[in-house]
Amino acid sequence: MSADLCVAPNSAPTSGVAQALYFDSGNHRLFGWLHRPPDGKMTNMGVVVCKPFGYEAICTHRSVRTFSEAAAAIGVPALRFDYLGTGDSAEIEPQAEQLDVWSRDIVAAVLELQRRTGVERVCLLGVRLGGLLATMAANQCKVVGGLILIAPVVSGRRYLRQLRTTQLAATIGAESGESASSASGSSQSSSAGSLEVSGFRLSAATIAALARIDLTTSGAPPVSEILVIDDSSLPTARGWVEALTGLGIRTKSLALAGVMEMIMTAPQFAVVPADMLAAIRDWLLQIPRASSAPLEAGGQHLDSGTVPPIDELTLSDGGATQQAQLTERSVFFASEAVLFGIVTEPPQGELRRRAVILLNAGADYHIGASGMYVALARRWARRGYVVLRMDLAGLGDSGTRHGRPDNEVFPPEAIDDIRAAIEFMRTRYGVRDITLAGLCSGAYHALRAAVAAVPVNRILMINPQNYFWKKGMTLNDLQLAEVVQNPGVYRRQVFSVDAWKRLLTGKVNIWRIVKIYIQRPLLALESTLRDVARRLRIHLPRDLGWELEEIGARGVRVVFVFARGDPGIELLEIQGGSSVKRLGERCRVHTIDSADHIFSKSGSRAVLEGILSDELFAHTEWSDLHRAKLERSH
Image 1: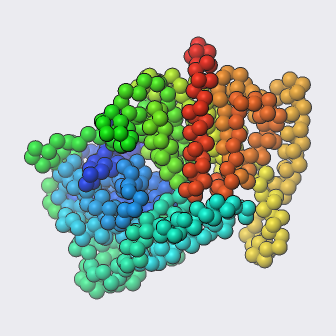
Image 2: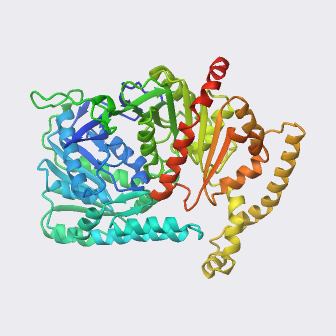
């Protein structure tokens, strides 16, 4: 993931040569990445990577990318892609049976890999639900000769129990004051038979299909080689492996540490298990090839008369003409690293020059938490906006700067990346009105860019939990959000037997709690003193109130949207002080009930989308009044 690679217009800044592409699956189009060997030579076998479902797909994004790069590095071309209705692919019908659709998507990916590279045999690499889907697809595609399955779902019923447990844990962990509307929304979802977990949905038909699946009784997939990698602390596929061996399939089973941590750890803390990566590489090197003659990596292996597909996605806008369609395409632009994004373009004939740039939430890649950025981009494009959902350097599918780590949530050069994105949008699309938007750290970067006088018209900030980030800090350091939020949490836990057990067994960091209680009154005192200084027109460093007033004075509209109870609200009051009220309509603050930090419930997410859209659409005339001033200053 070196930053100095020369890339083609649709190539990724990865080790080797990766190509962002769209391809057909039935009547729909899917987005994917083709990783080719860096030396131009490849074997006659390729790999199609089958992602897990939902939040697990976000957690494993970096690992899936690394697996694909590792395969390409040993001469095995790899295609990773998004199923229909997920990631950057086209939308899916809400009632569709997703297992059937997604297994057919895998078959389409296999055929696409063959068309683009000429490989004769394909191995499917599936993670969790992707392992089950890979097994199903192997029964539909004769060229699949091997399976690599990481913590595969073997029993659909057991998997559904795990999803419902996750859903219940999220409900228990939510604020106790949830409104009746939220409960009603959950009830409606339940009565419809669908299941929403961490913002991702399985249809009623999919749940019914999952409940009938048990690989231990489904017979053997028609492949010659299978590698099963299970978690050493929680193996789930042992019985199925024994059954496969009894059926005469060459099956290798490994129990490795770190599998579930890779699947369930938030992306900013995720680490690709080295043992797993080595095991996959060794297995790919050892299994038989269809032919010993290497293929040239440069050409396409297309059927006679077949026209190579156009690498873009069109989405219906509800109209009957071609002009009513949206278009999505992958784009690359340069900061110090090569940056990647997906642009959603409005229907043809749109004359307004307006754009929104969506910034990473944490280390989630460019689809955003719960995939909300995809929905926002397509909604806003239908209203005439060009929308870029981008990955900052070191995140998602962008390159990483020399000397900087991957998955860095608060990189010091983020403003440079934002400037590059704005310049790209202005040059490519001629936009004049630009909005920055983001959740959590994305909100922080939008604010810092506005403070740095980056030429934007408005910033939409969702649940920011930091307004200042010191160089050298890490996510493990004590954050002000903890100082604001945790004292109340600790008071509630005084009567918790489990909390006392953790305390007495040394599992609680006492010093961290002490620092929180010491800093809380100091923070309140500092807030009072800063507000006094503002009234006396004394400009102190690292003063959020002054920064907001300066942003407003430049004509930049500021919008905050919070989930009720999120610590960013109180932090804004403490650090922004009376400046927020003085700004009036130039600084709007909204609070949404019954929402968590990432708006994982569809009901609260719909409210969020509505508020953001109203703020974006309602003030274009006000923005026009200040555009000339903004352009003159830059």
